[in-house]
Length: 264
DNA sequence: AGAGGATCCTGGGTGC
DNA sequence: TGCACCCAGGATCCTC
Image (cartoon, rainbow, N blue to C red; front, top):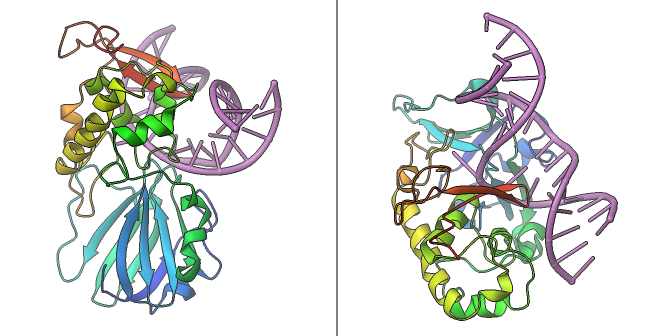
């Protein structure tokens, strides 16, 4: 989509997680996408109209590119057209379809001139793979925090972009229990945790992400990092290091998978 | 201030 | 086969 012009937009319902922008189709039609970007789990498209189109996939959202004189891409997991909520018709003939069964995703427009005040991104922590993230940063950010490290790493204002899978995997690699208080991480544990987070994220990106049931890239291809999970979704299965059964507990309403022997 | 629960949805899996 | 129930990649709002 980068550099391409949106000819028209088809919006099939009034809302996803939130209502679509007022006069959404009208405001994006004819706009050129100057730049596509990402911040945390938010996708951004800088439009030639001076607005930024912000898009979030929620848990089951997916963009699929089609058209352009090519046969439609094959969808290995099968998209149900009932959940095609938005279709971007590009001037070059491509279509970009947003499909989202659970509708936890959303799209919003915000002026580029004041994008630094866009509320959902204002309090974001550093990107894991950026210079702003390090063991020293974790030392500062986690100091005095009584919350479990599991919850702290899911908090996007502490570190941006980690979800439940990658937090579980990073804590396993760092040998840290998800139940441990965040305040006990600074020091040697942070020195293990920061590189573990970097490695998990980098490897998952390299593997094309983790396809549990819905996720696929814009060409419909599945990721394969799910085959490399050490603990996530492996309750009762043996720890790959020590053989002990992987445990599952619920923290802050989310499953935490961990090895009670290797993670302390 | 910060933690935990409920909530927004649909669909897949499991147990009876 | 059908039904009830649980679980799921996220983020936000509300209580306590």
